[in-house]
Image (cartoon, rainbow, N blue to C red):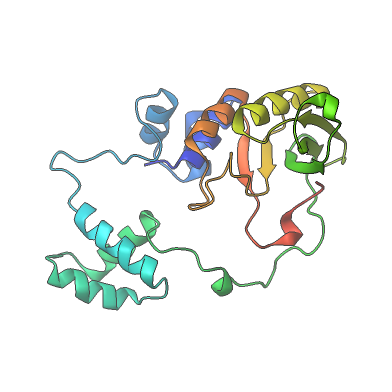
Length: 238
């Protein structure tokens, strides 16, 4: 199964001329899987069920609930609990499935800080555009926008060159229209788009790309790159 982010990356790489084999190696996936997603035969984020159904689904629901209560719960403890529920596979199978399905929530305090970049991260030309909103209070009454106006800023990570677009709203339709205007003003689409956890792009609860925005990224052939939460040294030029 490809995640929504991997599907966006695969579509973007295919539009750049990458072969299916090269995309499969890059993402660490099977070529048949990549081909199925590129041809629209499978939907990202949905696992292809075997003929007998997804046998692990009842256990996955239980594990997800337990790990949501305690992200540091030992896998050995969880293994003992699911055995009481009828789990008959090995401990290694359980831990593999927990990793594959991303059931353990990320814990920021446990993430090692060693090796993190502490300055503006350099990018090659054409690699990345970084996006963010700037809020302006009390716009001119003649605009008819109410008490606030918003400026969408798109900046090239390599050169720092930027363009902006004024908007009455930060909702997704205004965001998409503004991005199109700015992309054309900057001269084209870069390989990736960086967002600072923008709710119309990144689901704030899951940290995953919104399904409605995934179609936009695939249309433009750009990869979506969320800024890691609570890491100001990864916010970039915006």
